[in-house]
Image (cartoon, rainbow, N blue to C red):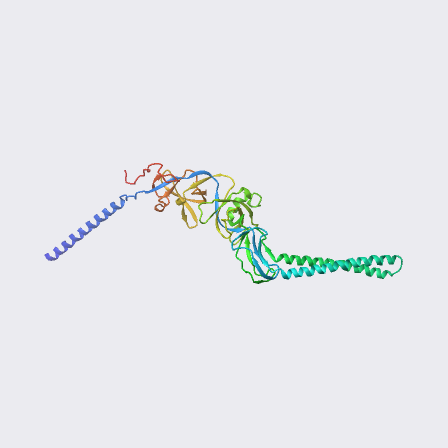
Length: 401
């Protein structure tokens, strides 16, 4: 009996200990949950005030150099090539000989046509004489009127035959001239596709003997997107009437900047609905022959007048799907998400078309460490060279009392 009582007493004590322990643990946990958690230290970031400057806004495009004159040299008469007068890649002037086709068959044809012309002239003279004689005989009624009419008709036929002979002589003379193929424009000639001794055919379907392109000036063709076209339309681009007011320059792949200056010549009459662009043509001097047709050219086109714009460092811009944004830091050092619309880069700085004002501070270094509404520890630096402008701002760490 004593054993049973002892066992029950021991169980009761054990249960009491467990209850007390559970209550104590719950009390400790409750006190711990009510204690404030330690806040993370604000992220150190560099911020810079947005700049405002007077700029000429430039837009960059890609273009190709094209010759103003591009001629495929084809023979206008058939024959055998006797002489090639140029070397590959040579500069020629308008009228310089390029090829000579054997002229002897055409010289003979010209001689035959001139002989026929002389015969027609002699017949015309004879018919005139006979007509005058017949007219006198008619006056004295020595011959019938019918014979006079026949003589008059013969004169008309002789006159027509002479005109046909004159045309044949002109055609033969032109064909003889066509045996000497000359440069129709000044420029640089390509290689000879057919050389001495080859027989050539005449006509538009005949193979080209060579090609000739003008050297200076040259065209540069490039495509302007619809938004840029709308901006430039007020300066004359829409009607081709004020293109000279819009500055344009190009740079080649191996060049720094845009050293070649030119002027706009024309704008196409419709936008390409597939690409959303419109073709624009500019003219550039090429007296040194550097610009070769087919070359890639970086094109820079600018507005006609300076305007005030907000500028920021392009590295401070973040991408959110199809949007561009910056983090603006206010007086309370809180990072605020701000969507912006960007323009081109001018003098190494990105133009902000909308969404940001002058002197607003944006994060230029440490953007990846910050989320919207985070408290940051900003260090104010220069937007242009990132040099510190002020000591770091003091931010409460959340543990001070």
